[in-house]
Amino acid sequence: MELPLGRSNAKTILLVTVALLLLTIVIPIYYPLLGYPVYLLKHYSTKSSSGSSSPPSSSLSAVHVQAPVSAPPPRKADEDDDDDEDGIKFCDLFSGEWVPNPKAPYYTNSTCSAIYERQDCMKHGRPDTGYMKWRWKPDGCDLPIFNPVQFLEIVRGKSMAFVGDSLSGNQIQSLICLISRVDYPISVPTPDENFKLWNCTYYNFTFALLWTPHLVKAIQADPNGPTGSGLFNLYLDEFDQRWTTHIQEFDYIVISAAHWFYRPSVFYENNQIIGCHYCLLNNVSDLTERYGYRKAIRTAFRAINECKNFKGVTFLRTISPPHFENGPWNQGGNCVRTKPFKRKETPALEEGHLEIYKIQLEEFRAATKEGKKKGKKFRLMDTMKAMLMRPDGHPSRYGHFAHENVTANDCLHWCVPGPIDAWNDFLLEMLKMEEVRSYAEKVFSSDNKM
Image (tube, rainbow, N blue to C red):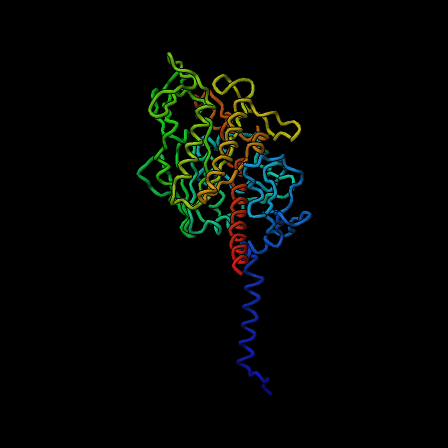
C-alpha cells in the first residue's frame, strides 16, 4: 500500500530534510563564520543593559562582548571610546600575559619559504625552541590561535595594506606562513620596489607592504650621517605619495612605524628647516625625535582622513619594544633570555619609547575624533604591552650564520615563527569585531526603520 503522499513525495521530503540538516549542522562545522555575527550579537551588552554578560562558551567565542573585568580609567569627555562603539562591549585583548602553548609552532621554515633570512632563527642555529611555544592570554577572555580559514573568509574579495617599516614586513612574513596552510599567496610584480604585493587567488584576497619608515616624504641626505645610520630630510607636513596615493585601493590599512625616527633627521615644514633630531648642524635646533614623530604620524592620519574614496578600516599597531641589554645595539647590546617576562617582573618601557607610545595614543584619539566626522574608522591594535614581555623572541645573533661578519645583534625584529604570530591573532580577532559591528549597524538600522 502506498503512503497517502506517494513514494515520490516521500523521497522529496526526505531529500529536503537531509539538505536542511546539512545546512544547519554540517556546513557550520566546516565554515565557522556562517551565522557568526548572529551568534555573537546574542551575547552583546548595550549601554542601556544592566549587569555584564558571560562569555559565550562556543568554539566561536573569539569575540567576547562583555563588561570589562575591571573599571577602565576615567576618560575625558572628548576622548573616543572605541570599546563601547554601537553599544557593544568587547573584551580588552591587550591586557594579559603569555601562557604555554605546546602545540606551537603552526609552521616552520621547511613548510614556509616566506621567512626572511634575518628572522629565520631556526635556520641560523638557535638552540632553544621554547620561544615559539607561548600564546597571549587576555585577562578577561581568550584569544584564539589564528585560524587561516576564518581569516580568509572574512577578507575574501578584499584588500589589506601594511604601511610602515621592516616590522610591518616582519608581520607579513608571519601572515603569509599562517595563511599558506590554506591558500599560498602569490607574489605579484610591481613597478615600485617600495610596494610589494601578494594575492591569494582562491579567496581573491590581495595584501601589500607599503614601505615608508618615516610615514611622510623623506629623502636621505647622507648615507652615513653623524651616527653611521644615515641623515634624512623629513618633510613633516607632506604626504609620502608612494603610499598615500594607494590608500583608496584597500579595505584595511595596518599602519605602524617608529624606530627610524631615532636616526638623525632634519625637519622641514613649509619647505623650511625648522629643527632636527641629532643632526649636529650649525644653527639648527635639536627638537628630538618625539617632535618629528608626532608631526609625521599626524600627517599620515591626515592623509587617510582626507582620502574621500577610502571607506575601509585603519588599524594603528603600537610600538614594538626592543630588548637590548648590557649596551645599545651598536655597542654590544644583546638579548639572550629564553622565556617571557611574567607580568610582575616586566620592566618599564624605556623612557624614549614610552614617549613615542604616548604620542601614538594621543594622535590616534585625535585622528579617530576627526575621522568620525568623515565616516572613517580607526582601531587601536595595542600590542606594546604584550611584546614588552617577550625579550626571548628576537633573533639576537641567530639572524645570520656564525661565520658571517655581523657585529650587531638583532633585538628589534622578531623570530619567525615566534611571538610576532600573536600580531596576526590580534588582527583576526579585530576583524571579527568589525564583522560584529557591521552586522550590528545593519540590525539597528533595520530596527529603527520599523
